[in-house]
Length: 248
Image (cartoon, rainbow, N blue to C red):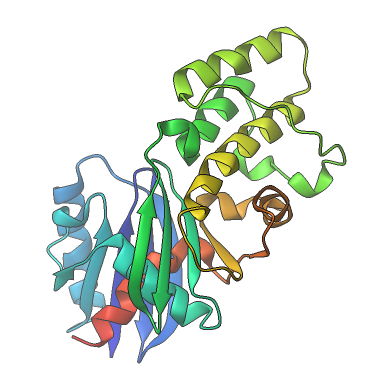
């Protein structure tokens, strides 16, 4: 039996196709603008390609997918984490618009916290800075940065922090150090959520920022905790949705 999980994020939509409870395909695309019509056509295509497949969706645009079931992204993340990394129960997910911390047991969501700061604690802040610097996301490699003395941004507001970025550029600070300062700011914001979680242990990092090489080591340094990146961390919620679909 085939099942499909869809995680509609603010910037990217992630898909997981499972066959008999095993991941068969993972893919990602930019989140469409006219979502209702787009996903209507997408589901018609899948019904032809995968007859009788079951579909579960989560994320910002989940209501635009006429799936078998729409679930919370937090619920899907808990299921996906347990599927990919059953030995770890805590996940920190840094998305385009927010950052979430969840704690699960056997795939069941126990607790969660969501950042209450502005966009300087999310992936969109990094996207804006990269656009200013003219750097592509896929070209970032933190493992190449030997100087780990972070430039600390003073503002928790993305608008004012971005002004600090412009000032750093005017002072001829190297673009690589500005990128590092931006990522440091995002992770520092995320660390406030970890303080709310009483349970210790290894932290699984998920979300789009996990695609940056070397981010796990820097996160471990900032959090002062062991951080690991599970397989397919960008797709954990989509995998969770597909797993939930197999049980329908």
